[in-house]
Image 1 (cartoon, one colour):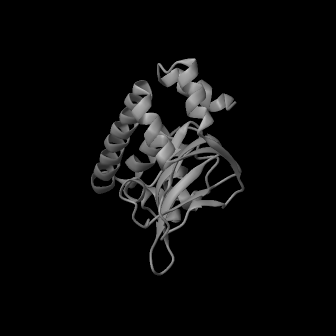
Image 2 (image 1 turned 90 degrees about the horizontal axis):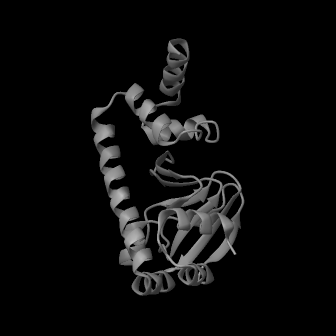
Image 3 (image 1 turned 90 degrees about the vertical axis):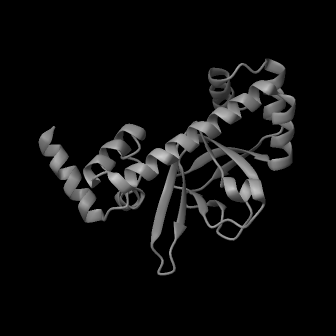
Length: 193
């Protein structure tokens, strides 16, 4: 049905074939064009989204128009605005595709029913949430304590291969540095290697 997702879920959980079929039966596949959004600021996030191929990003804009990227979501990751999704409040964030992408989405009521009926899927979901909390805490710590060079190194370790797929200004936004600073760091690192 959805070979990328099925392979991913089989490698991560102990769901049975029947449970996997049920999970897939509730998913809706979408193909996104580059720059196409699945969530706009002011909307309520109503879906859990799995990225089968491509890259999505979560970001927020300031009044003067600058973008601040919180997260990149490449293949085999999930996208959601947890506060908007859980509390059913308007989102402060955008989620869009950085390249043509293929995603699976589950409406909240369907996803909650799956979690309630499939214990292995619920355990898996809880592990993802826990891992994301840990990663977000690490990211906050890094943003307040690391040098620009250390942030760059962490990005390369966290997202191997992504640097070539994401525009330089977006990586700079994610790291909280200027494009010029990022270029200087990359140039210096090239000389070191």
